[in-house]
Image (cartoon, rainbow, N blue to C red; front, side, top):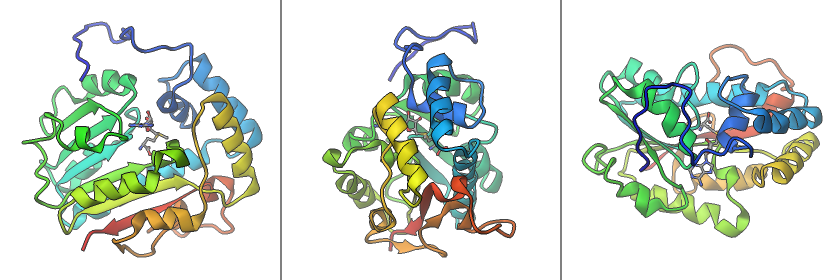
Length: 271
Ligand code: SAM
């Protein structure tokens, strides 16, 4: 884990290279956030040139993340492991979960050290929330992390979030095998919320091309492949769908636009 104490809010630790785009900051640029640099904005601008959704896909993803967290919290889940959590935004997993279950414990995991830099400041006063820098490709390191052991009780149900992160794994990295290792570590009654860039429209392939070229990552997969990440779990209604269709709070306008179809996902419960 990286550690620093610095009073200057604009201080960036030296391991953060702002000359190259980072996934977390490009996503922040798609969301219209402030925590991004020219290299990140260039990727987002090129992406939106090929995929003119004005950031709608990212916003829909963020909104579905919160609907899922609220749903799990309402089922009694009071501990969450948010892998590939991204930069903090207006609302965040811990605030949504703790609104339903005060005292709910949340651990954020991201391999981009800028997430820790930003989240630290935000979480200074929240004893129930932690953030660690680790790579999801090392499940044992994450599940046995000293910041997690003794904080989350993995013998009880948790909510595992892998939201818009698994598409950053290549096929050669065995994404299904990796998700299976996390599922195997969950206690019965736990939930997995997973969303994934979906090859449902030809324009998504164009966006995928931009991301792979400029960022080196960001693979679209088809619906059956996304569905199979939930193998062995009971799918919560309405199953794996385009994100605006997952338990919407307001009637959904159809047909869905580009931003509505570019990511699919759902929530599953471990029996
Ligand atoms: N989960 C958030 C959401 O859906 O709003 C953020 C999604 S953002 C598109 C993907 C995040 O996953 C980025 O912050 C990136 O740094 C992180 N990430 C990518 N590969 C990762 C890895 N191998 N291990 C941990 N985090 C990773």
